[in-house]
Length: 386
Image (tube, rainbow, N blue to C red; front, side, top):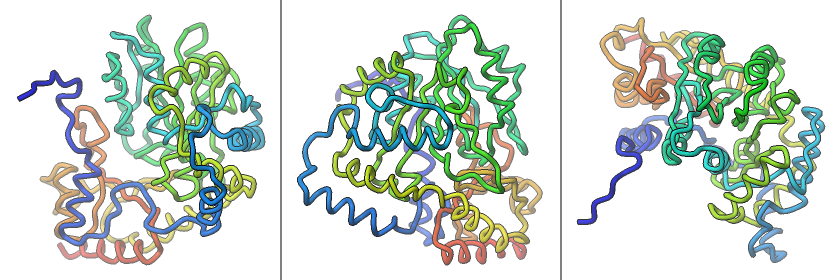
């Protein structure tokens, strides 16, 4: 047998794989993994078919199709007031996870530290470790999940190479504020620390709030990779297509690695999205997903779970610590119990902490058909009788 000295010895199948499999086995409504159970705009499919039929089936340019990069530049300028040069400061990537991994790969040398906030999207920590870096975890606490800036200040050192931020935040559905961005900028002033800003839910902001993109804040944008996702914005997560923004010098280094990690991203998708982006379809996302959030929470309001605020993304979390059925259970055990006994799958927030820190909170995805949400909410009513 070949023996490999694993770089990720403690990593197995993700919690999303585990909970989706369990949901399938017991015929539960799956509100675990974050993807829609409805299709994209049929017009986008037509545009993809047109791209295929018009011969866009060979390698795309390494940095991305020019028309799509230009479309991204127009969108960012309109939304956030920052001009990115589509020729030198924008790269189309094979999903946001690839963009995050690429940014970490070009920054991190063995022993370098990268600050990240937990609970965190599960790709950050492994990407840092795969590159020989040291994740520095800063814990966020329920119910507000606000950064403790004195803890951040204390975590910064001469070994800090980057800081990863995520707003709207997965899994907590909270937003960073303009004050958060200004405080971070002040902390990083006169340092060489790069910001990696995961903004894949940027168009899903609720209740009239504003997305504080790093691109809005020049002092941060000048030291940042800003990453977002077409898959999230247009309900095509399976296309695995996203983009990365950065100042020219940072993007030049990013593209050096990008060309050897994937070289380029799926060409027909890029041509289809370049045309679709002209239609500003993303501008309807906030009201669309706020409607789904409200439908689900209204239907499940009195089920017994204590719902936490959802300011953005397509997630909402709930505390179960007060429930008779949950008092003796960990978040993972409760999520499995809820899937088996109530018929609704969710994700334990403890899975988003490197050490399994557990505040007895689980996350639900409401990026589902209305009938799926009503069915899930109806099943959750069983909690009142258990």
